[in-house]
Length: 305
Image (cartoon, rainbow, N blue to C red):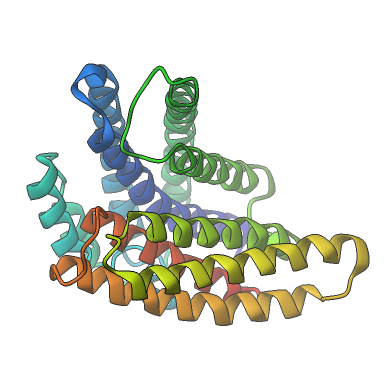
């Protein structure tokens, strides 16, 4: 595969994952505002709509282009996504474009895709449009975080969660810029990616722990254990930078094992939430959302094996 072809495929894979993540971030923010902050709620919905438009374009460009491994990773959609969208729309009153999920259900992959020059040019244009929208969305999230931290705004989202969403937006922008400047990902970035995603997984565990109903003690204890395990992995990575007591390969192997187990936990809780068997204040789509992020991280870890 040429550099141009690798750039095109990598860009589209990045967008199919992160544009859905971003539109859901906007939805979660909107759902958390009180009536007094209605302007921010409507602003979040405008971002959601714009991300949906770009995701639709990415889906159109990606059909027949992705690798089988990526398409089958369940990082774009899972078997629970459509149900979670339907339930979340019903619970919040926020419209969700479920046609996008149905479109992704019928996407095809290829080991030898036909990546034309025109497709590469259209992908580059999409990258530019995404970058502009991301810049605005990051500023929007930073404003919300500042208002919440200064007690000028109330939202049902933890301040740490708002910061978490913003960090993922910045990571997406960084990955996009890396593709634009280097044309393809480099293995040397794997260590920093592992640190980023281990921190994301740790925070997911903390959020799940805090959003479960107190009666769900078994799941609360399990979520707390996952948070502790990821904190230990982050400590090992930090120590490796100075003492090299644990190799990058060992950290990645442990991260993969931990994330496989955490993915299974997330899948179980997602099914439990969508089937109303687990009590929580976790939106069904949020549960499916963090499951897809675990699937994405697992694919990255396996690519770098």
